Length: 406
Image (cartoon, rainbow, N blue to C red; front, side):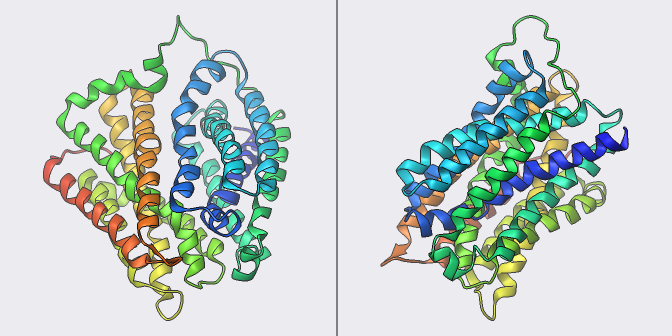
């Protein structure tokens, strides 16, 4: 790959995830401080990510893969996203905000597949070349969080004054930049299709036959269930850290992405040394430990517990989700590889987190007493739930040898 193309793809990845991390991390605090959202309203807003994940395959399968160059669609979607970001910036109530964030997630989630397609189209050996480009996305997410804290928008005084709405303006500008830049990216023409593609093929439903395998069925169920406690993290970690008095909460949450890079490097060792089952169980157990740390830590003398909980993100995400992608790839084989990955994505970011956001909102409202959250009670529930998934998987998933694939 030419160095100029590598630089282009790296910048594309940086902006793609700078955009996501630049508003989504602090969204929970924005909803509480700026829009006075209840737990149910917050759940409704966060669930737009799941609806976006469910609808994204239709946009990619019915439009991007058939009629238009991927880089052009990427450019158009991000320019539309910039407009919606500005409208979100101007919104003063949840009722006004919701349609804009729903529209944004529907057009943003497909871009995650588009940036991958554009990258893979330029690579001779994706297994070796992709990671060095994709890591720029994680760096973009980290820089976005550090920027918000450096600008002071997430401080208690500024957040109460409504400064977090500036994140939408910042991301809107980045969306314009990526939108315009996309038209200069290497051409990625639509794939040649043989005949009509069914809805089942687009959604990855052809991979449902894998559920006849008892182990894969257990993994599929566990993937949905573990995303329920995951939703608590996305929805309430920032408001929790902010309310605990921890300084620079958005910047502190970027530690999670730093650990993600570290444990991604360590994953091959753990996978080859301990096998798939023990690796994925370690990821599940990390969720339980993380929420215990949140339940009993605070922003003062026990702040290290909160930071440690955030730092566990690398194990929580890499050991479960990345290991799960490798397992799915191995079980599916060549013919339904893409369909199988699509099915797991639909199960996790679609169904699992859709349920999770609703559950998290319900638990939040149930533990709100006289305007004060009982965070110990709130975090105890996903901790116990994750432990239950851990036990279920340990008992019913039979160990099998899976080779690590980059």
